[in-house]
Length: 339
Ligand code: NAD
Image (tube, rainbow, N blue to C red; front, side, top):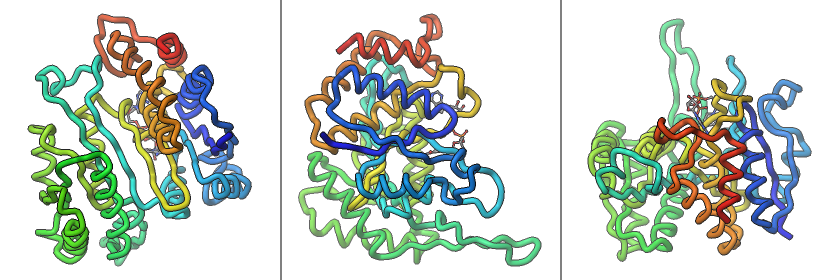
């Protein structure tokens, strides 16, 4: 049986992970879980990278990490465990799929405009290196790294994925009109790789214009590849198009290790109340099952989720306020009831 590492995370992490694993168990998903220690509470125990050596070793030998959101402790000199994990294991591509879900009403679903956008965000470079310092008392300086190999591996991943999905259009979002050298390099590499995929329509849009177009005609976009910071911002925008962060799954793809998690964070404002929406983590888990080749069971769980949403069943963060919202546990039970 396939074995994966699971880290429940902080805040709402344990609540939504328990809900998702209950759904997986009810569906008899043939996966064994090794629970590993990662997150803020591990920082607090004195592990500066937010994970125990045993956790790191397990993840490296198993190759798959299914994780809940994790909090970055506040204060200078502490690095985000999420960023550290992505860098340590070179998960260079962050894939985020945003699709219209029947039963999750949005401005676009009400107007009959379907959305199916995949954002591929470069996951390691850019300003996320945290290379910044005070130049003088009044001047803060940050360095931005964009490399040819780093750009090429994420752009190539995006083209390969677009080809497999039979996507027609792949777009590069950038700000090369202003950041001519850094974003200019990313854009150059995009068009170099594009020559190898003549069957795909490759084009580019300046990122501010991209944001405007995404909120007016999201149906015109298929796959969009961006640098790290711009990709982070644009993907939260896309989450808003399909109903919010509760519906935004993600996969961090590397050659040896892949991490599946929701886009959202630990939601400290609602942690411990059993009211969080586990859908984003469930969608991430369904993506993980497909990655592991468990297509049939992934489809069974996905169909149960979609049918549940279509029935108007929901947690309190979205949906018709006239219909009583379920808590996290009840919502998971409703999905299980629809297998
Ligand atoms: P957040 O995503 O945790 O919360 C933003 C808002 O969305 C809050 O109002 C929250 O209640 C709501 N929300 C988020 N997920 C929800 C869910 N599943 N169901 C219902 N409502 C939900 O963002 P934040 O407040 O900026 O960040 C909180 C912490 O999470 C920070 O420490 C941040 O560093 C961390 N974070 C972690 C990850 C990760 O682990 N990948 C990602 C983003 C933020």
